[in-house]
Length: 339
Ligand code: NAD
Ligand code: WQD
Image 1 (cartoon, rainbow, N blue to C red):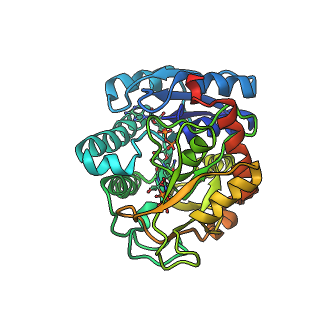
Image 2: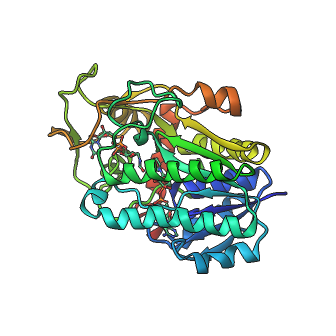
Image 3: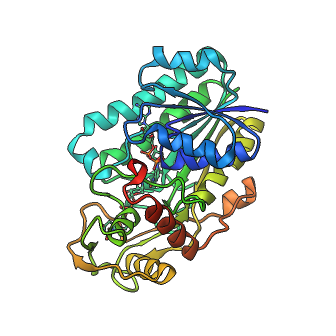
């Protein structure tokens, strides 16, 4: 069976993808510096699947150290999750973000070139559609203007990968544009474990539910949407992980560059999703309305037709599943992996 290197695989999406790959019969190697994760997530992946993962603690920016991973394993494809992802922090520390996100990509491409690895799947984001494109987003739309350095790193990395594939016709690149991944594995053993105050909506909601935060502030209720709060395309992280298994099959059979949206195609507002969490788990979430957050778009959601047509992938879980599984993880792990 093929061996897949998950760069940044100890993180939220990487750990869920590791489970799905192992359960589909792939061998998994993870390289991570644990800057936003911990080895415990990988142990839990092993417990869920009953299979072992080869784990390397390495800063992927450091191509010389990363080379060790390539020399010791026969890698068939790389999935590149390794990156910093906090939008607000990227505005305050742009150089850190450009350095980390671009350099991890360049190091991976250099090692792949040296060891003849031709297949790479990249964790891109709906954020590359920018401010100009109308919803629902389709893959052939031009990348737009981002509102923050994090988004620009994704735009730049997509360009770097496209240029690399253009120069080497034996390469296969898949750019996956994720929408808003939430939820957790149904075992409740792995999930999202943000450091400090969560930047994203659902981890914040879960921490209010478990008593770590007093209340949620909903950022703005005067947007041009049905209930005035922003609408997003929330996708269950296990559906997203399964999309990676399909992308692995695809990247190994094809050449060139292909882009796929991974979303449900259905937007929900902040108010709707908070209400859904309350109903699914029979819990009240204390919230108040506050100011808009800088850089937020009123709406972001996918046209998910291409992934269905080309990869044969579509989401299977609904909003209730996302809310229930998120709470199952948070309730079982109130302090995340720190117990
Ligand atoms: P995450 O922070 O949980 O996972 C990223 C992993 O990369 C972490 O384990 C971190 O320690 C590791 N990492 C970062 N820099 C590294 C380096 N220099 N060397 C080695 N490891 C490094 O984030 P996630 O939510 O799992 O996201 C995975 C990828 O998907 C990221 O690239 C992110 O930008 C992208 N993405 C995430 C979302 C989302 O909402 N979660 C949406 C769109 C795109
Ligand atoms: C969702 C909605 C907020 C927190 C971000 C990145 C994107 C992607 C996914 C990351 C918005 C509202 C939030 C809170 C709130 N990549 N909200 N109170 O902004 O759609 O996307 O994460 O790697 O690139 O920009 O997700 O979860 O932060 O916000 O009202 O405390 O919830 O205003 O409308 P977003 P989010």
